[in-house]
Amino acid sequence: MPPIQFIREDSAYHSFCGLTCVGWLYQKIQDSFFLILGTHTCAHLLQNVLGVMVFARPRFGVALIEEADLSKQQPDLQHLIEEIQRDHHPSVIFLLSSCTPEVMKVEFDGLANNLSTPELPVLFVPASGLDYTFSQAEDSVLQALIPFCPEAPADDRRVVFLGSVNDTIADDFALEAAKLDIPVGGFLPASRFTEMPAIGPGTILAPLQPYLAKVANRLTRERGAKVLSSLFPFGPDGTRAFWEDLAAMFDRKIDLSEREAQSWERIAEHTQLLRDKRVFFTADNLMELPLARFLKNAGCEIVECSSPYINRKFHAREIAALDGVPLYEQPNFNRQLGKIAELQPDLVVSTMATTNPLIGHGVVAKWSTEFSFMPIHGWAGVATLAGMFTKSIKRHAQLDPLDDPVWSAGLMPAVR
Ligand code: SF4
Figure 1 (cartoon, rainbow, N blue to C red):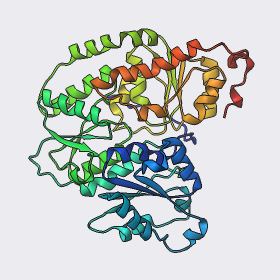
Figure 2 (cartoon, rainbow, N blue to C red):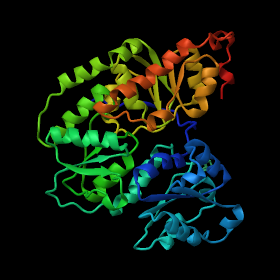
Figure 3 (cartoon, helix red, strand yellow):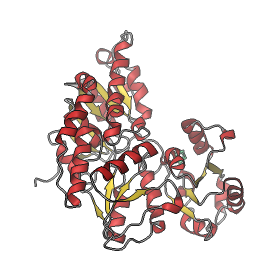
Figure 4 (cartoon, protein in one colour):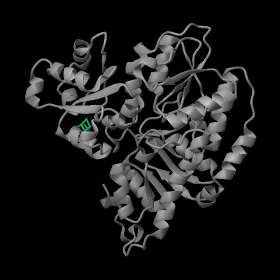
């Protein structure tokens, strides 16, 4: 096999803060509470992004801290934990770090240990905006859950799906596995903290999300589980490969070519619009490789696919499927702006911070953040996935043309 090639630019990139993983995980793990040790900035972020009203009693909260609090040995959170226990009755509390306490070197592991009781574990999750893209924070939450997954015996050969998906998509995967006679051990995370799946040397881990390399690696090392190496189940092409490769790990040879063809057929209206479009991914949530591969197979030309982090092993199949596409890790955004101006792609998939300025300069751009929140997995998610790309293109076609198109006005370097 030829060496896998991508260019690493080691640049800072504009990704969303890891705390936002709370948005989907508190809903997924229904008996959990997420407590963030943070500042007013963190509280504003969560209130604005998650848009939850206080009277809705969401199962997450921010313990507001000042620098003076952090000069003490450890912030006193005991009264807050008792209040959360009284008001919400969670089975687990995830204690999330944020930038300020991390910079001040708060010893979170010890803090969480001191607050934990056998009845109510408090688990530390590193999730600040300093180190992680927002999607990778899910990886940290799943790693915190490992000790609560029972040990499965070696002869327990079942698949555990790795990654948080909504209940409809989870049901779809469980149903599909039953149809293909693949025994299911559960999902990590499960909907309840008390029902995390058993994992052992016989477990096959099937990653549903491309940002879970670390937890997959730890489960291989610590439990002897095997990780499915395939495409991620996005689009007809990825979903077919995912199920065929998973079945092969259970010594079953299946051919889903017809199913894949039918699935493409069902989104023909979208692929007609996507065909020959030139698409640019600037890097945001680590979903870029599978999304670009889906678009490539849908007939697009991928002029650049960049991602904050590329794992040679975990992403190997996706990288191979993108053969010929310029791949970058931790790209330089200024270089990308120049390239966008020069190549004038038909669609740019970019972060929340950069998409609107790009649109303001006449570029057809799409928030990549949205892909993390949408049910785009498996056969059931194909139409939603394709529609997310075409919606931006259609919407732009309905807009009045700008008086000063970016390409001629040379404004791109002003976009930051
Ligand atoms: Fe901002 Fe850091 Fe708080 Fe995230 S953790 S909201 S990046 S201050």
